[in-house]
Image 1 (cartoon, rainbow, N blue to C red):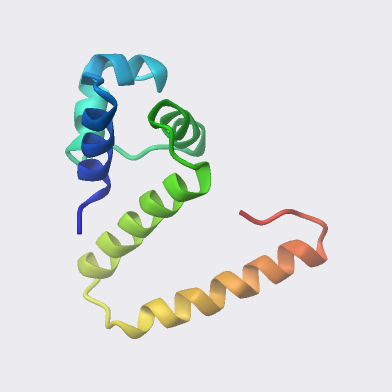
Image 2: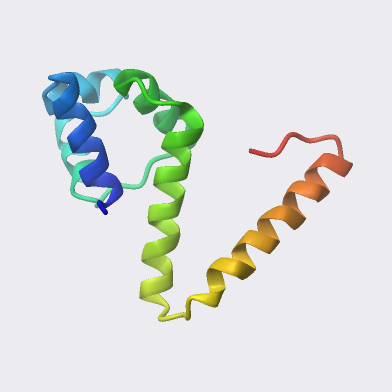
Length: 107
């Protein structure tokens, strides 16, 4: 298992890119990319999409990696039990059903 930052570092190395090269493609500076790889910088959806394209990864997979990492960190920070994952899955289904009813597309 690896953190999101470790995941990005591994993919970047597999692509033969340095941090600066990847940072330019993601509209960050080299220091910002270093923070991403060290799990110290949050990313918005636009940057996640750019990151996916730059690293040749499916956008949904990139979002899943990022959001699952963020969620896992919060569960540790708040010291919640494992059943929070089951509840989160149910709430995701609920929110998706609301978005479909309202004519919105859920991610």
